[in-house]
Length: 335
Image 1 (cartoon, rainbow, N blue to C red):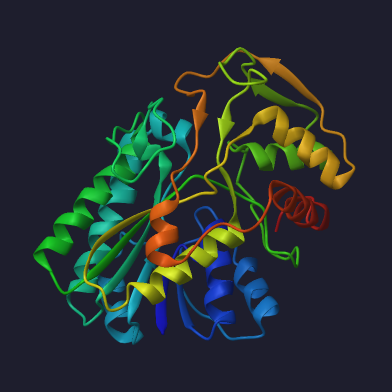
Image 2 (image 1 turned 90 degrees about the vertical axis):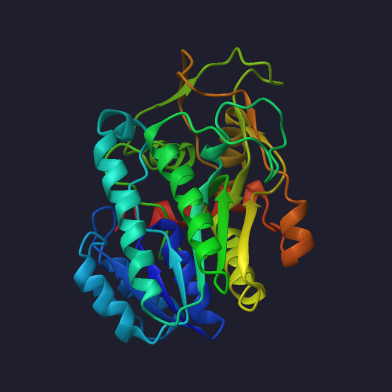
């Protein structure tokens, strides 16, 4: 299948592109490099030995987007493009609402003018908000607590309305939990611009020496070691979930929602210890006060994806740590 991938040079998008190509799909990548590097496209080609059609384009360019999609020959769209820093979204909410929501609407308008009938959206577990009723299932009440999360929630609702108005279309909404890890080759991985917000890039940058020490935000939560517990999923398991959705839901119109996680929780201190054990590196950390909005425990109910897609996460926390270090040690300054 020929698939258009927006944000295909980003962390998750690039790993999905690799899996698509390795499984015989054709890929058309759209990215504007606002949070990624062109080198990623070169490395996707190196890993797969296959060509990648690439277009530098911002989704705000409605005319250019419509022209590209109408001429692309694609049968499906995977949508990863969007701003994703929670803290920045609080400071600049309008930037996030305009880019993430308007960009998606532009994409759907362009899609509606073609024969493309399948759309896969990169959503997030942030749509569950501050909810203590774990594990989170797909039918949990939704309540995002920051502008970034609300853009994901609003887009989910837009997609449901779009599918209702276009009943022959298949829309799949994938709610990720905490993606970590990297491709086993060490050629592509997570390379956030500026100061990392997520746990694993911080751990790996401390280990490689580019950051002197990491902060653990709170050790007084009602968890076994007092630190927050999250559901970490290897990015290659996540990529596999996208392929399963693309192939299983191709001929199934409707709006399909799936959690992609392991169904298991790992605390911050457990992750640090796992990383040290898997890599032999020492990770220096200090305990700080809690961050506003952090809930004690978050992990996914994953039975729906297993039942309907035949998918489950296979890689261990040790695999996640080892592959992260393989990427970071080979690329200490990123791309």
